[in-house]
Length: 187
Image (cartoon, rainbow, N blue to C red; front, side, top):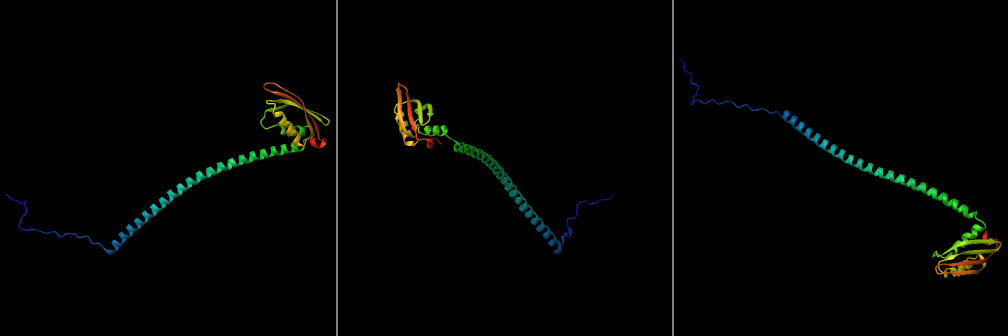
């Protein structure tokens, strides 16, 4: 029988030679350059990514600003249309006002003489030659003398005379007879 001793002999120690990796300078420089290139690409990517984010935010802000400016332009165009419409209406009114003659001018001037407290309204304005008859109602009897004073000081009439006044509790009915200055006042 053969015996095999599987337990190692403790007396003899064998040292194995350690394998040391050999690093060359060229390989080290190549790895360093790769790391430097990777770091550079990472920084460049981060810079480009942040620029894209900033430009996108600026684009969105400018789009909102553009939309607001476009709405302002639309409002301005609408206001300009309204302005043109109103201006044309004003021109028509001025043309009509310039072409007024006779009774229209007389009526306009008489209406301007009515006291501002709106306590007086007219029901009659009749012109026969130089004689003008004005009639109406007043909430207070004191409004009639004010109206007569305004008519006298307007320069439309030579004379302003009270024909009748009927004073009730709530209203006063009056009638005036006026003599106009002539054609000049009604043209």
